[in-house]
Image (cartoon, rainbow, N blue to C red; front, side, top):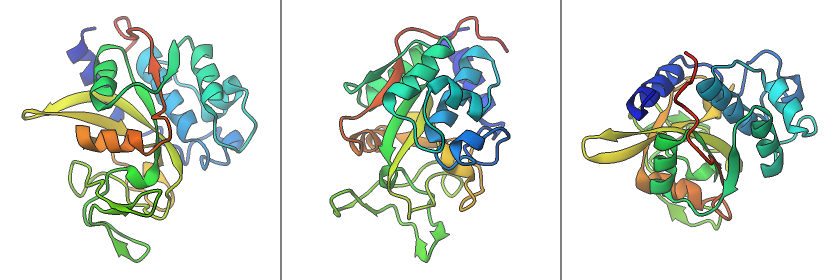
Length: 231
């Protein structure tokens, strides 16, 4: 499988619009999905790379993490390693590096503060219509902007601002612009059931997402994970 075939496979699976963090069977260890953003990123990575379907409870059991709290970095790595996925924690990757790894090796799990996630253009939620602006962790107004496809993707639940994990599943091009295909596991929460397949984000938006987390923490594969990926 070459990189073009890998990209097509990833997008095809994302467009099935399942494996978000809410509403799954066998999720009793993750508060019915409420704390399962990293677990869901791992679950989807196992499917993309191994062609294997595992439950959120199985991921949580493999991590060794307690029930009903978010995964730590080390617990997430433990789960990934248990599925034969050689991932490490990195803090040296910017947007270009993330997209290169996603293209040449496999999906990258990104930690972000949710205020930094690109928004659904014009979405009205909790008395506010999203205009591409947000308050950062210091209370300063910043511009996360909008995800693409416009008015069909991106953050809507602006009242949630805390830590979150998303999956940089693939890279791509829109004209001359290099972009990332990001799966946000929160895209089927009770507060926002639209289930976008992915958020397409710019390099600048991806850098803001990375910078929102202290230390720019990502979990990235150490080698190419596709080639003999089962269909």
